Image (spheres, rainbow, N blue to C red):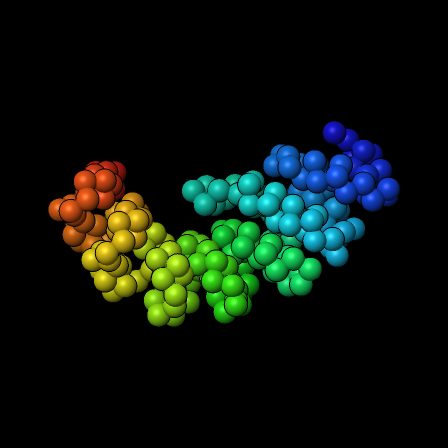
Amino acid sequence: MSTTTINAAIEHSNISELVDFLEDKTLPIEEIRKIYDAFSDNKQLVGQVAMNLSLRTSVYERDQEYSPIMVDLLIDISKNPIDMGARWAVAKNPHTPVEVLRSLANDEINLVRALVATNPSTPTDVLEKFFNDEKIVRDGLSGNPNTSPKLLKILANDNDKMVRMRLAENRGATTDIVSILLDDTDVDVSKAARANLDARL
């Protein structure tokens, strides 16, 4: 695709074509910025921009796709009232600035708060507050490397297998805490804990 083609789609307000462009996670971030700026009042396109940013970013390779434009887009989307649902993509993105995550930690939508709880860029003091939140939010803490050892130790005894599984896989958890799960009643959890500890050797 060419810049000319995208410019033409913007000029003619060809929403369906712009949506197609945004489905490509290799689309240059400058072009995404251009589309967003032209249609920041279009719920469908704002949502698609948020989805594109989510697809092109990996929580495992946190430097991947980082750019000042990416950060600016995340900030703008977090404040855009046209598509409140797009905030989930901002909440989970590791490039989202800490001040935006602090704001989203108070979001009225529990899924947004839950994704902030899983975001590796969320500071420990914000995560502490989530421990008394709804279960969907609190459960996200077990896999976050920034969650304090005090809370992780409590979560190691959680009744929910998936909470313990995320904790068993958490590379930020201390060896002592992961070791608690070596004798977990669920074989998948104990295997995950063993694999986590072996990877540290």
